[in-house]
Image (tube, rainbow, N blue to C red):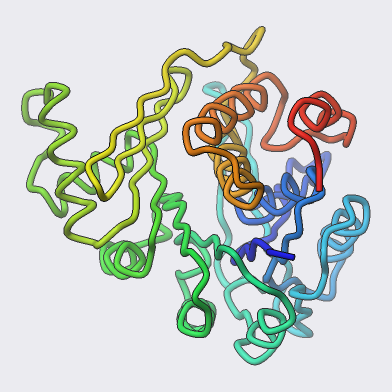
Length: 308
């Protein structure tokens, strides 16, 4: 059975009074597991209290642990969440276990499944060890390469983005990330007058061509998403059912990616996949945090779209 391989960070968001397991790759893998879609999260955690919290989440949601590595020295990834008058500030700590994912163990895990897609981002590429492991996995597989850019301030450079785009088949970005790509590769800067619709489409088509992509997907928050295909196809989704209310948008992009990858595994039509990905991402905006605490959240969606 086809498996979605998810590569990168599993970490703990530390709110001082509670610890919540997160990291974009973990969030994507957990969503897939909740829909009972085969997934393999390749990550690395430490032999510490936070590592035990991560392991417990793997067990609670019946996630495959075949790609879960254990580091005897480095600590489990941790993001310190500081509350202030303007909301929250996230401090991503350096030198964490997910920066040292072992290539031999990762390749062994990959060989144990029939990979349909490999999901990756940029945070787990900030250190050479995990970056080299990622490219070893990509070189070893013919699976579709799905890049969720996920640019985190201070955690990437343009060179990493450039190589990631060249390595990818499908790229998902938000509007802010798209502006960065325009500035780097199309010489269009945010300080210039706003582009009209045709100019945006033309610039996105240039990105698709430069990097040899199958598709570029731009998420637009509550306004939906736009899909730019290599064949010139453009699919705009703006008529998604709005969530009853919005608590925060944290994790919406991860939810979108999970449903997009799920749709490819299930063989959904592209327009159906994009519509469902938008709708599910909106639903995640109506809960606090990046992922629901309870499996009961998924009952409605599994009833509508099936499982397995």
